[in-house]
Length: 301
Image (spheres, rainbow, N blue to C red):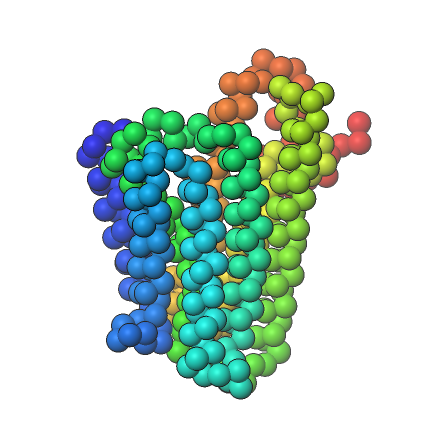
C-alpha cells in the first residue's frame, strides 16, 4: 500500500475516533481531570499500539484478533471497577454492569475462537505482505483501535454518562429488556454459525467445499448477522441514558453494519468464495437462493 495512504488512513482513524469521543463525551463523568469517554478512546488505541510494537518486531499477526478482544474485556473491567470505587455497590449504574458483562462474554468467546483459528491455520493470509510494511501494518492496528471504540461507543456512552437514571420506569426497563433479548438472540446466532462452520471444515469429506447447511442455509453470513443484532441490542439498552451529543453513540450498530457489509467482512469473503466456486453450479444456485446477510427460511425443495 502507498505510504501516503497508510499515513492518511492512520491520521483519519485517530481524528475520527477523537471527534466521536469529544461529541459523545460531553456528558461523561470525570476521570483524572478529563471526560471518562476520552480515556476510553485513548485506551482503545494505546493498547493496540503496544501490541503492534510487539507484532512488528516479531513479524507476527497471531495476536491481532486477540488484541481487540483484550481491549474490550479490559476496558469493560476498568469501567466496572471505576463505578464500584466511585459509588460502591449501593448506588449501581445498571448500564455499566449489564453492558460490561455482555461485552466481556461476547469478546471472550469471539477472541478465543478467532485466536484458535489463526493458531490452527498457522497464519492469517491478510497479513503476509502487510506486516512487512511498518506504516501499512500500523494503520491496520490503528483501524482496529477505531473498530473497538466505535463499535462499543453506544455502550460506553451509557457506562460513562452523568445522566444516571435514578428512578427507572417501565420505559427504561422495556428498552433494557428488548435490547437484552436482541443481544442474546444475536449472540446465540453468532455462536451457532461459527460452530457449524468449524464442524463442517473439520470433516475431511468437506475439503474444498462451501457450507450451505444449518444457519448457512438461511444466510450466507449468519455469524455477521448475529454480530450486528447483538450490537443493536446494546445500543437499545443504552438509549434511555442518552442526551444531546450522546445520541451520536447510536452510530455503533450502523458502523458495525457498514464495516461488515461494505468494507472488511462480507465483500472480502464473497470475493474469495467467488474465486473458489464461481463456476460451481451448486454455488451459483446457493448465491441466488440464499440471502447475503438477513436470515430467510430456505425452500424445502
